Every structure is written in structure tokens, then in C-alpha cells.
Length: 537
Image (tube, rainbow, N blue to C red; front, side):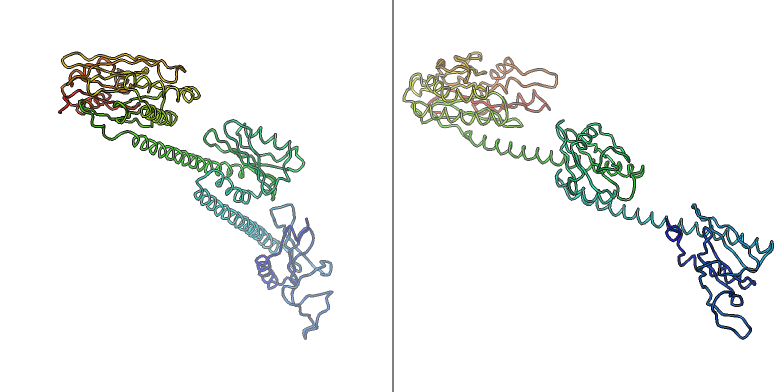
């Protein structure tokens, strides 16, 4: 490093030396100067003493030279007596103030004081310049951090957020390149390089992937890689299963230091927090979208159910379905235009969209089977078997099944015939008698690929009650861990038998709601209440 590079005679230092020189020349000195490593970098001479130079004669025999003239060759000066004092420059160089033409302890003491003050002033100036430079750098960092925060706020998706950070971070850490590692679900991370992949090779990728799994921030100022002199590794503490890391490669202005690592960790915490916010935002969006789709499906499902039962002479009918928080597989349908009036209630196993889709298909199968049948006797058996044949393949392919009951009412004989494919509870309560559970007369639909449905019948006289409901009425739990069960349901039907069909249904819903208390309904609750009445009623 040359002298001019190590120590520069700036405007402020030159002005200070000129001030000192004027003072010494006024005291009678022949010259005043400053040298570094025995080389004079500044000298000012008296107007009355300029030997060795081509000067204009003056009337008094002297010569003139402008104040502040620089002596390039110190050997040109002819010195009578001389004093000097060492100046501390704060580095490996040695500086000294010198005065020609004066001597003695008084002048030496004064020059020592000037040298001490000059050294301190020079050091203070260097400190000020250093602090100013650091302040400018810190200001640049603060501006970059502000831009970084603004960039993070603008993005609510992972990939755009990740991409937007790259340029800002690379500039902030003065790196030649930046690598990113992204993984999800324990898979090997994907490594990307910016601004290009010229610094990447297979060995580097394998090493970075191992560091990515360790999740430890670190500085490496010596590496075994040909193209990489140093690097700073920064893992992000983000929510599983997502994992990400930044790698700053080849610092342009030297080596990575502890301050770089601390700054990177601080920024990493902010980025990680923003990543988690973005992940949470995406999860909420996904949940909202799924909930909107579920609500739409539930509305469609409810629209498929009849709003009012048909008017069948001799019967008081009421049907209702109270869905749980998600779509399910309960359904009911009335088919009054069949050869004999029919109604069907079913429950597809499971919950959610699969059950709802199969419910819709099964409902259509029952309607088609009932409308094409020409029978009056055994019509419930034929309709149930026909629907089972058409749906068996769909049920087995998704490993699901359904329970269902098909009932038909003969207006003249008041005979109510039914075919029950594994459904319960089905309650019959004759006027003046006790309610009982009617057993199924066939297996659930989708279990066997053959016609196995049976048919039974009862006479539904006035005030007799025939109730079909889904297991959402019996499998209701309270806070004490008790299930409502069949016994409570039979006692309830017995106590409200004198009500109309609609009132019976309302009382049943109120009873199980009161029993459950604050517990959330976890299954659909669907029923058809049939009560015999006089034909003229």
C-alpha cells in the first residue's frame, strides 16, 4: 500500500498544518513541516529563508515564496538548527512535525504539544469518518430492512413472498450469490440459485441439503468448494411441514462476521413470522373455501328433500331432516304417483361429500325403481331390490353401504307394507298400546349382490303411529357421557302419541336437543312420522 493510499492530506488537515506553520514562522522559524516515514508531505518556509530555489530577489536581499509551498525533495532545504516531534497516526506509519531555525527546550516542549494535539485531532477525524461511514451503512441497512418489511407485507402466498425476498436479501448482505432450499413433508429440499446457477454443483447441493436438515445457522469463511470462498447459512424456523433456508455465498467486501450472522438471524425471525402468517392465511382460506363448498352442498342436499309431504287420505304425514355441521347421507323421499303411494327413508354410512354423493344417487335410484314398477303387492320388495342392484357396484367400489326402508300405504285396506334393509329405529305404536321397535327384514344395501329384501306389513288404523328415524336420534350423547338410546326414545313416543304427526316430530327434536345440552350435533337427524287418521280428516 502506498503512502498516498494510507494517509491522505485532506483539506481539513492541510488547513490545520497551515495554521500551525504560520504560528511557528511568526515565532522566527525558517520552515515548518510534516513528514511520514521520513518523507516530507507538507512544508511551509519563511519569506526570508529560501535557499536552493530560483526565487525573485527582494529589496532587503531576501526572496519570496507563496505560503503553503510544498517541498518535494526534503534535501533541498538547508537547515541551520532543527527540532521534531513524533505524531501518533494510529497505524503502522510514523509521522513527525519538524521546525527548522529554532532550538531549545521551550520550542521542543511547544512542538511536542502541537504534535500530540495534531495526532489526537487526526485520530478524531479518522474516528468521525469511520462513524460517518458506519452510519451511512446502517442507514442503508435500515432502508433495506424497511423495504424488506414492506415486501413481506405485500405478499400472502408462499412462493411470491419467497421470490420477492431474494433480491433484497442479496443486496443487504453484499453476497455474490444466494441459494434457497425449500422442502415440505420431509422430502429432499429443492435447491435454487440466484442470480444464476454457475456457483452450484452436485457436491455443494449435497452439503447444503445436509445443513438444511440440521437447521443450524452458521458462517463458513473457509470452504472446500472451488467456487465458494465463504458462505452464511440461515435456516428459517417455519411451521411444519414446510421448511426453508437461505444461503448467502461469497461476500463481495470481505468475510462474513458475527454481526452478519446476528443480523441474518434477526431478519430470519421476521421472515419466519411472516411465513407462518402466510401459511395461516392460506389455511384459513382453504378452510373457508371448504366450508363454503360444504355449505353449498348442504343447501343442495336440503333442496332435494321435499318441503311438504303429499296429501294421502287416511294418513297424517310429516318429515324433516336436521343436518349436522357437515353434509351427510340421510335422505327421505315421497313417491305418491307410484301404483301405490310410497315413501322412503335412508342413511348412507359415513359423512361428508362421499356420503352426500351416494345419497343423491340412491335417492334417484329409488325414485326410478318406484315409477317403473307396475306391482301393488310386494312393491316395496321390488323397489328395494331394484335400487340395491343398481347401486351395489358403487357401494362396493367405495366400501360403503346404506340402510333404508321403503313403505307403501294401501288407501282401501289401510295396510302399510314395508321392506327394511337394515335400518333402525323403526317404531310402531298402536293406539292404546306400547311402542315397539320393528326389526329389519333384510340386510343393508351394498352388502350382498342379490335380491334378499323381505316385506312385512301392519294395519295403520286411526291414532296408530309409525315412526322412521335415523340413528341421529338414538346416538345422541350428553355431557355426562350417556347416550339417549332406544328406551328413552320409546318412552318419548309413548308420551307424545296423542299429538299430530308434526307435533310428534317437534317434540322428538326438542327432547334430544335438551338431552344433548351444549354438545354439538355430530350426526344428521332425519325422520318421517306417519299417523293414521280417518279418511275424512
